[in-house]
Every structure is written in C-alpha cells, then in structure tokens.
Image (cartoon, rainbow, N blue to C red; front, side, top):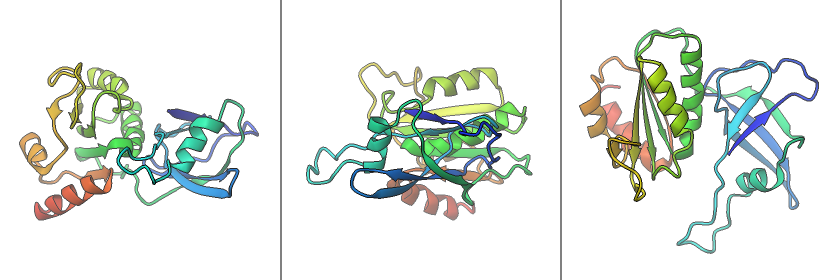
Length: 220
C-alpha cells in the first residue's frame, strides 16, 4: 500500500536523492515508535510517497507479533492523518553524475528505493541503460509490477526482469514474469556483461548474503 504525504503548510517539500528514506515518529497506544521507510517515487515538490507492506506474524512462528509500525500505517493512517516526519536522509542513493549503465536489484519490499531511482531517471529522459531485477514470491506480492511493465514498454533503455520464487497458478513464466526462481549470480551472469556496471541492491538478508559476496568475487 502506498501513502502519499503532503506538507501541512502547503510549501514545497525538501528535495531528496532517489534512494533515500524518511524517518517517522509514530504515536501508538503503547509507546512511540521510530521507523524508517524508503521513498518510492521520484522527487516531487508537492508530495512524498512511501510504499509499506503489512507485516503479519510468520505462519510458522505464532509467538512472534506482527510488524507494529506497518500495521499501524495500514490500520490507523487515513486521508487527513497527521504524521511526524524528519527530512529525507540516507547515504544509499543514486549517483546522478554517472552516465554508465546500471543494475538495480530489489527483493520483496526492498524494491521501493529502486522505484525511486528508476522513476527519476526515466522522468528526466536519461538514456542510461537500466536493468531492474525484482525478486518476489509471486504476482500477488510483486508491488508496482504493472507500472514497471508499462515503463519498460515506454522506454527502450529500461530492461525489466521479474523473478518469482513461488508463482501462483495463474502466473506464467515468459508472460507476467521472466524467471522462475530467485535473483542470483547465475541469472546476472547470463543476462549482463557485468564488467563496469554499478549495482544497487536492497532486499531481505538472505538475498543480500547470497548476492553481495558473489558480486564481490566478480570484482564488482
């Protein structure tokens, strides 16, 4: 679910670097929570967008509570709600000075900063070759997948690779997704001439632990 945040005073919002995040202070019933969420759209003066997945209790770990902050957003935040937010921050952001081809890799909700980078580059008319590898369980959990397919159709320099690890019955490899499985080094090596490409990665720990050492071994 995406939340669109507008300034109460109507003034232009502070600019940010694609890939950065917002810090929220949430007033819950028990105690205040501080949480960070990546901005999921390109910089705009009139609103910020964050895209937040509801985190439920793991099905095999009934003793673990659901995500407090994500459920607070989904259950308590409605149009007109007021939120305490710090200005955008973070060292993980797009290098806008480079014109080299780049690779964006997002796993699960880790796709959100990649969306910000992608939307920005395409909106400014960048001619950089952009490769996006997006790993999700299936079409139900692949957020913004239709938007991504539309962008690929509109921009010949954007190449989308959707990877589903647990496709639904109606999902079709070669149709609404490209690869059955996870984003891994073998897939990247088959798809890209890796040398010289900058990589941006964001995803769950298992994905990062799998990809980062492999990319480092390739000199990336």
